[in-house]
Length: 198
Image 1 (cartoon, rainbow, N blue to C red):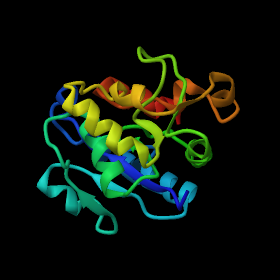
Image 2 (image 1 turned 90 degrees about the horizontal axis):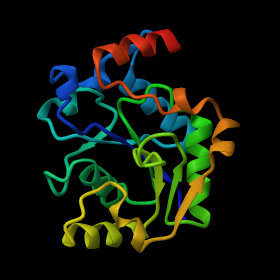
Image 3 (image 1 turned 45 degrees about the vertical axis):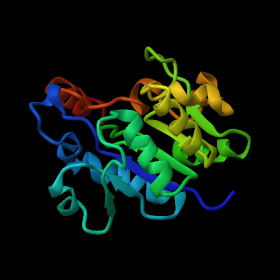
Image 4 (image 1 turned 135 degrees about the horizontal axis):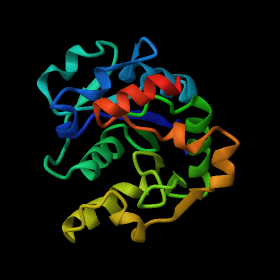
C-alpha cells in the first residue's frame, strides 16, 4: 500500500447551523477546518484534499486542493466516494465539523488498512462506527459504485462488498475520550459545547 492521503469532507447544507459553513467556525481560537487540516497533515505527512461543493471553497484554504463531489446528491457517501476516487485511495477521511480528531487517531486508522479495505473506529452513535472519520482503501471505489448502482446511498451501505476492520472502543480509548474525539459541531449549541471541551 502506498502513502495514505487525507481528505476533509465539507459536505452537507448545515441546515441545523442556519446554512453557515460549520468548518469556518472557531473552536479554541482556530477554525475547525484548520484544525482538521493540521491533524491530517501531521498524521499522514501530506496536505489533505478538501471535498466541497460551494464555489467559495477555493478561498477557504489556498494551500489545499478543492474538489467537488463527482456524483452530486449522494450526501455523505458522495463525499466519501469523491475522496476515494480523487485522492486517490488509500485515504483517511474526516468531516470538517470534528474539531477534536487527533493525529494519533488518524495514523492508527491509516495503519488499519494493512488488513482491511475500510477501517473505522467504533463509537456509541447509531451506526456503531464513525464513517466520517475513517480510512478507505482502493477496493472501496468499486464497492461504493456498486452500492450506488443498487440504490444504497448509506455511508456504510457498501461495507458488505469489502473487508471491514473496526478499531475497537477499547483501542479508541487509548487514543482519547470517544465522546470528545468524535464530537461534531452541527448546531450553535454544539459550538458552545466544543468551546467548553477545549
